[in-house]
Amino acid sequence: DEHAASDPYALAEIAKNDLGMRIPGRYYSEKFENNQMVVHILALDTSTVAIDATQQKWATAQALQHQENKNNESRDSKKHWLVVFTHHPPFSYGEHGLQGENHYLLPLLQTVYEQADLLVCGHEHDAQYLQAKPRVKNASASKNKSMQHPTANPDSIDLDDHQLPPTLIVGTSCESRTVKSGPYSAFHSLQPAFGRIVITGDTITSEIVGAPSADRTDRTLLFAETIRDASRSRQTENTTPV
Image 1: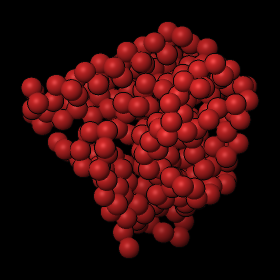
Image 2: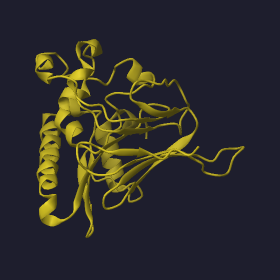
Image 3: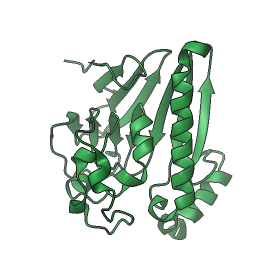
Image 4: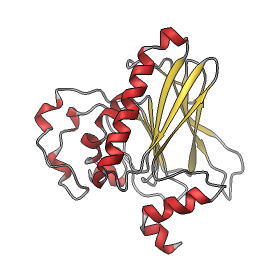
C-alpha cells in the first residue's frame, strides 16, 4: 500500500487488522511468562516517537515497571527480561548509523535503553551485533542539547552520555549497503541473514543466521552470543561458530 508505506499511522491500522502480522498498534507491550521467567516485549514506533510525547512517557513507564519487577526477582523466583524492538537503531556502524541520523533517539528513550536486556532493530541493510555500551560519564551535560527532532544535528549529542544494551540489527533481506567494524562490534556482515532470539530461564541468546540463497539452501549460524543473567552486568559468552 503506497499510502501506508509513507504513513506509519496507516501502516499500523493495516497491521492491526491483518491476522498474519498480529501487530496491535504503532507501539505495544506483550508479556510471556512461565514458571522460570517473565519476558517483557516492548515494541516502539521510532518513526513518530520524536513528536509523540505520549509514547515517550508510556515507554519510560514500561521500562521503570520492568526495573521494579526485576528488583523483586528474589520474591517471585523468576528472571525478568526486557527485549525492546524498534525499527531504527539509535547507534550502529551501518550506513545510517555512521551518519548519526538516529542519535536523536538516545535522550528520548534513555530510560528504555538503560533497562533493556536486548535491543532488536532493522533499518540498516546489514547484519550487526553490538555489545553493550556502558555510560562513560554523567549525562547532565547533554540535557540542554537540542535533540527533539530527527532533523537535529547528530553532532550535538555525546554518545558517552548514554548507556545502550546489546543490540541485534538485521536488515540484509533487502539490498545490502555499507557496514564497518567499530569499538562495540561483535559481528558485522552484508550476507543475507535473519535474526533469532532464544530465551531460557536465565539466558538470552541472540543469533544471526544466514538466509538461503540461489547458491546455498542451508541456514548457517553466523553468530551467537548468550547473556548469562538479567543483571545490568550482562555477563556474556560469545558462541560464534568457528
